[in-house]
Length: 188
Image 1 (cartoon, rainbow, N blue to C red):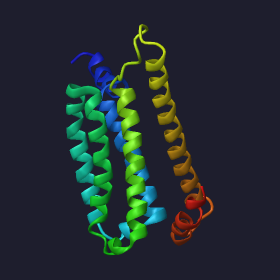
Image 2 (tube, rainbow, N blue to C red; image 1 turned 60 degrees about the vertical axis):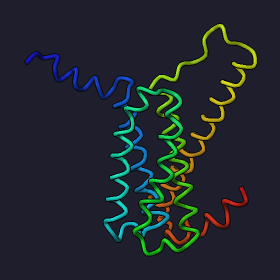
Image 3 (cartoon, rainbow, N blue to C red; image 1 turned 30 degrees about the vertical axis):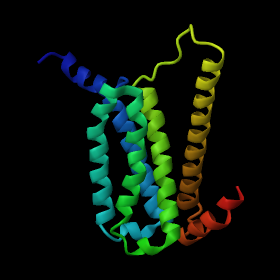
């Protein structure tokens, strides 16, 4: 076995492509799910079923990355939107599933996961920028979409960091955070 074999194995994880895209997406969603369970719906930690269902949906998403490689840009949206459904499915085993506020919070985290996944796929799987010959309205449309996506990602990341700060450093109870969803977020 040559000395470059371990290096080539490591290189697969750090070069752009489907493996890195899925690893980054999975890492982000696990962070988001842990934050969600500890800060918003702690009942998710009382049963193993939400974690089991969530893990199964992550496996399904990982298997679906091959379709992205073959179908390209048109497969990114449906693959990303599956994460909204996945978050809702993971909540189904909980006894608190009858609370409307829990569904809204879950769907919101699912939407954020879908947006992050869509952006990561777009960047990692090589959604090509416009060709130099495309200008004017086509360029403006492309640029507007990228700016909107970047603004959404900044908001999602900022919201997650704020939630992490609230839980880790301020030791805010989940009931106060959950109440904040209904009192402060609508004002924004």
